[in-house]
Length: 208
Image (cartoon, rainbow, N blue to C red; front, side, top):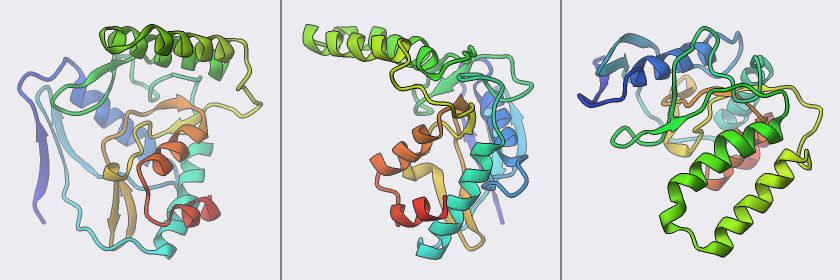
């Protein structure tokens, strides 16, 4: 089996090391979802085990849901906090144009989501946003800061970029790749799976 190498000569400092830290943080959870094994990492590349793909099945989806719950329940230091032991920057988005991702921790999910996700992304998108759209984002952020969406759940251990392309269906079950790992709300991962059409999503939820 050959290795899989991700590389980019102009990658931001710490980009591949951050991804490796996220993979390790997620993978260390006993009974959680496995992650692609790290072979090596340096400033411009990350080498991982190459994974064989199979057709998704309902049973694999159910088992994935159960393992994802275990990963989530392993927890995180705070909402927005990065992987244990990682004190560098975070990143989100495609290899060709990764976006900065704050890893500043918060006690409340709403404060984290408003200040570290909605506000920074809205600022980047200002040239493309109309006044009404920006006002709507500001209104949602205000509700987040007011605690309207907070609950008593603890910060969970999120993959952080759990769309279908980062869920690998292998002969041994689901294996995760390409995390933007941080502490957050479990519904963030679940919602991203739904948004991008995870196969057998209802079975994932049933297993969860």
